[in-house]
Length: 295
Ligand code: ADP
Ligand code: MG
Image (cartoon, rainbow, N blue to C red):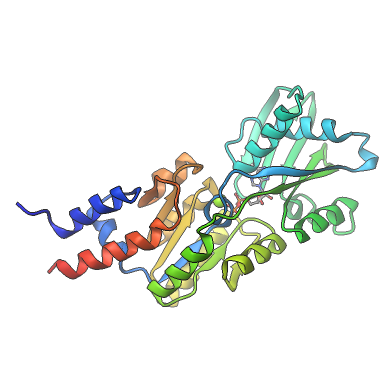
């Protein structure tokens, strides 16, 4: 027997390195007319590196002290920023203290008890909420202006310093954005938990004009809801735990597999296994072709 078109399309998608989880998903991919792209790990490679270590002078910490504290709190986390911080500490040969009571808040950061002190590491906007004039806020803004993700390190509620983290844009990011715009007839939007300054810089580089930044996981769901209310069939592409609710809420969700969190991979309808963003327009086109053959 000849293979039904949607099953052949799944096999083709597989050869391109995309795992499409069902024939229903293979069919739905071709209906998409709006794409919402995550930033970190999706448009960027997802292997960020620490570029700046800035202890506040009032903290009494030096660079190594600040980095070791942050690495301790981040050690249990699977977030790409956490891995960058732990790797930086290891590269410097620092001893990373063992923590208790680790907790993570997707889209915000982590907290843990380190040597009896509560260490929080995460988004300056959230951790400094209402403390705009604080020297740590100025440091963070300066790093974000340079396109970095700034991460605040807070000890017992007191800001002690800021880390700057940078990730490389994927080589194929701009061409993929253009290909998706051409296929769907709509410009893709950027939906990110990262700061608006770094998001705007990256959006400009890849040719995206609509940017939603500083989003919590439920805010990403709200953006999807807004677009679907306007009659769009939205494809969400993401990699993080923070993307899982939006991947589930969207018409179709695709997860980036290599650096993606287990939750994103399980929740998504399809997974980019070979780490190439350009396979996404390819599978949308495959679906369109298969749908034309199904009667
Ligand atoms: P994105 O949507 O771009 O993939 P996330 O929602 O995962 O980003 O993270 C958004 C922001 O939350 C980060 O830029 C950072 O400020 C903060 N954050 C989230 N998780 C962590 C973590 N483990 N360590 C430090 N900061 C974090
Ligand atoms: Mg992400």
